[in-house]
Length: 216
Image (cartoon, rainbow, N blue to C red):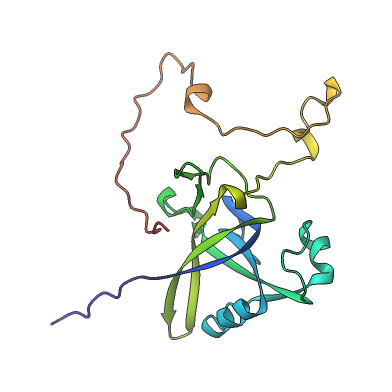
């Protein structure tokens, strides 16, 4: 019996101002105990209408410009309008409470001025107000057409790094410092520089690339 040919994966890309990025670490999904990665893209009305026509079950959210800065803590990126629109893209980080494989984590790419592309998803946090592109996987079934977060791409001019100024991250307060402190990513050379004498034999890692996230 012949089998139906496998459909080629379809992807889309949307560009806009990025807010509420939760791609370095997933957060709890709405009314659920499961975790998900997510990001919201602020776009104009025309872009939102095109999105809503394709993804009727995942419509954009209307945001009054008058309320924008209070909500997102940045000036509205689109001038001369009364409303802007937020498109939220999500991807599951757990299934029945079990984390998905690391290869399925959305990647965050930064294009440098020298032409190099760097993956910064686990080393830098995105602040509200970054400008870039978000890719998404498109799937359809009897219930409709749906999108799933894939990757994020920015250039140096569009990237803004989030630095916390609250709580214990205002480092050196006892020295009179009021400067926010950036925390560098953990490195194995530092965190495991002095292993125990009877350390167990390390488990061999599978270096095969099982990621289904496409490059931009």
